[in-house]
Every structure is written in structure tokens, then in C-alpha cells.
Length: 131
Image (tube, rainbow, N blue to C red; front, top):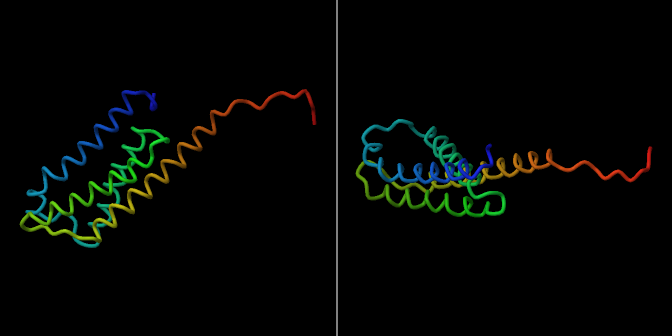
């Protein structure tokens, strides 16, 4: 079920919607700071990590380079976009938190998929030799 094309497509769509909300809701986020420093870095880490895992599951293990490149580019574009919004600023520390969340989440996803795929290994061949 989790590997169906519909679920994978939904993961990619959700990651895209997460990226869109960064740019659409930027003006309203400037009005009320929800998370003061340093807690905002945790939010960056988690948000971009979730986006990376969704994208990683959508594209599969063969294409893990896609979230590792695309998600930090989205983070950099978001920071650049914030530099033009009153009440917001661009921070390289925010982008580093985005990147760290992305890498951490993709590594966890990779390990989870490898262990999950290991469970589906075929039974060893019966050589007829008994211990």
C-alpha cells in the first residue's frame, strides 16, 4: 500500500504544496513570529526534513539525489524571497537548518527503506547440506 503509485504521487504533491506555502504565506508569517530563536531553527529542520522525506518516498531510492538537491534549493529560494518581505530577513543559519533537516531525514529514510527491503529478501537456497 505504502509503495503504490498513488501514495508516492501524493507524497510528491504534498512536498510541492509545502514548498508553495513557504512563498504564499510569507507575508502573514512576518506579522506574528510564532517561534523565537533558537526554536525557529528546529522548525526549519523539521519542516524541510518532512518535505525531503515526502519527496524521497515519491521519487524512490534510485533518485534520492533529487530531494538532496531540490529541497535545499527551495530553502535558499525561500530565504532569498524573505529578504524582500518587510519584517522578515534572510538568514544563512536558517538555510543551514533546512539543509541539516534534509540530509538527516533522507539518511533516515534510506536506512528505513534498506531495512524494509531486507525483510523481503528471498529465502536462502537449499543446497541440500545440513549442519
